[in-house]
Length: 44
Image (cartoon, rainbow, N blue to C red; front, side, top):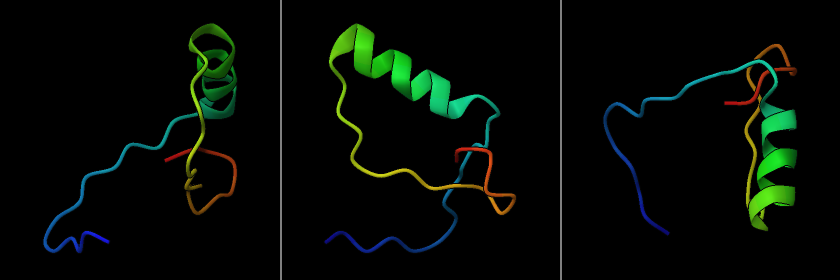
């Protein structure tokens, strides 16, 4: 596994689950891992 050090940028968005579902349906994308923001609702 690759070890990361230093600053790791992230983006938390509302509606992330809907976007993931769209990418799966439209492009056959495969969800590997999803990280949720501290509020448990937004996807990071």
